[in-house]
Length: 441
Ligand code: PLP
Image (cartoon, rainbow, N blue to C red; front, side, top):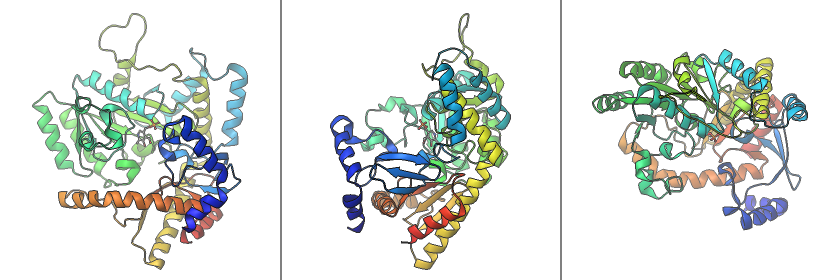
């Protein structure tokens, strides 16, 4: 009741806008990050580590737009360069621009597994392109993903393979045929992946294994340290391409992404989010030169070329924003500093949980911090019994997380769905400590 009072008393402007939105926008919500209880906040300003809503309430911003703004929101060094570019050529021309080349050169320099880069409209589109490319290159159709992993909202990468039967939102409108060539394995279960690869070998083979290298859902279910290296070996043994979906980890886990962190070189890398520093059209496919060359198109192109498109793809605005954001991340060591803020926050959360005897668990990989109010760290999902119990708990947990998210908001902290936190370069020790006081309240 205290939390709901906050929204009634302090957020009337947001409430009015949410009601207005409901008239013209289905559910009043355009974005999957904005399903907030009791209604989404309408934001007027975002700067660094803070956001201010239309009612003038100021929040510590641990959402950071779902991950892309590693430098903090609306970073002035990037903004000024974008404004300069807009003065010269506006946001898009459809022809080549120097920032396309500059961004590609920089990403190729930073990411061990990227020899060449092709921009895409979003992480979702980049995943679609990478899978198409893997199929074109190998001449095979089956793709293995890790259960619970999120690779965007395309039909064939739908959240969970059994979802079409459940009628859950993520599954509606997706025919079973769309997922016929996608297979799912549990995280950390290398033997199960090997069995699938072996089974597939007798039936035309596996085109690719796609993973989030920190584990499904941005590491909500973390993988063991050598999981990726073992997977690399398995893929080589069976001739399948290894695709790292680094939409979240790219540049955030360090300038070289999770692939540099683990020392494992994927064949293809999917990028998004930080790639354009929070500016639109954040997506790219990167990878081995011989594979990437399958994307060569245009006049005179013959067979065996994979098509990817997009009217606004690789527009100068996105590329310039990405180039200057990555340069600034490099100059300021933002990934390391945001990671230290994440470590400090997680340590503080651990202390609060311990002191108050709460059945919660906090864990982090640098600037990606998870706070599970169910107390279950989703590390070992290998037993089916355990999985069934987790599924039973999932509904209750989701509701509780939404309520916790609302409670954090009422205490001046915005999180991702009440369970995930992205720290940024803007998170000083003072801000983190202030946040910890609010979490404790
Ligand atoms: N892959 C991963 C690991 C993601 O976390 C996301 C989005 O959160 C995507 C792909 C999809 O990217 P986008 O939202 O840009 O389509």
